[in-house]
Image 1 (cartoon, rainbow, N blue to C red):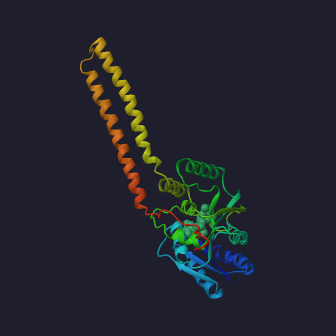
Image 2 (cartoon, rainbow, N blue to C red):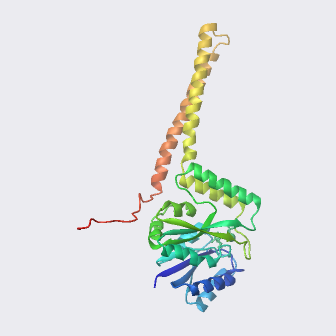
Image 3 (cartoon, protein in one colour):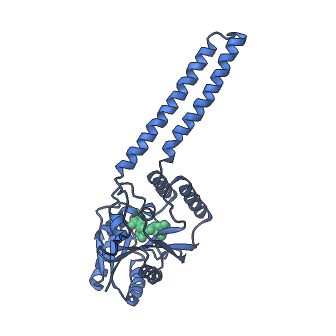
Length: 311
Ligand code: UDP
Ligand code: MG
């Protein structure tokens, strides 16, 4: 029977874990798969780990992984994905905002041949208008700036096939923007729509500061557009300076040097300013390249290989 591992990052989720596991177990019972659950305790300060331990004693399908401190959800997910050894994995939040009941729909798409099946929310119950607006703005900026299209309104709730999991494991960059990485690996991707429920219990760990950090991380790890900005400002400033310089010089030649020293001074300032911005742009370009190199991403993944008929 194919194996499925459900990875659940949990940070201070003591209030919901029992309910979560009950609902999840109910769903897994129905699946014709060899299922297990891997809880990753991301350095919780409450009783989360005790509850995970109790769950592993009660349910042989449950396993736990405790990180040494709070490393953040992206790292917790990575730890779970590294640990998992199954034909498919599902990543799901512990707070019941991602309904476990959707897992069979994800599995169905996987059985139909998809490698990455992400759950796209069609409603964001319990979220403020501001959060909705900022998240829409973020996805729009990402789409404009980066080559990797991060699917909109998609959390980390998704299913990965074995080969997608193996591909993802090869991305070892330190700044991990998982939503982008999931999209970057390619393969056959599809989505399943669902209504996102409000948090079942406990508090959200995100605040605007953390979300801003995540957004900056997403943009900087999937685009060097901000670095390129210096080049364009440099080029336009140099052109403007050059045009203005020509005018100052022409004026001095035709009407004379009324304020003594002004034309030369102006020309030197404009010239040097333009050169400096251009040089910054050049540095930015090289920095962008060495940044791309330092991520050490694989160059490609092969999806299929076909040999000639006689081979
Ligand atoms: N989480 C985590 N480490 C963190 C923050 C969050 O493992 O540092 C987990 C958390 O326990 C939950 C999931 O990530 O299972 C989503 O967190 P949360 O519900 O706070 O985020 P939101 O749904 O508000 O985006
Ligand atoms: Mg949540």
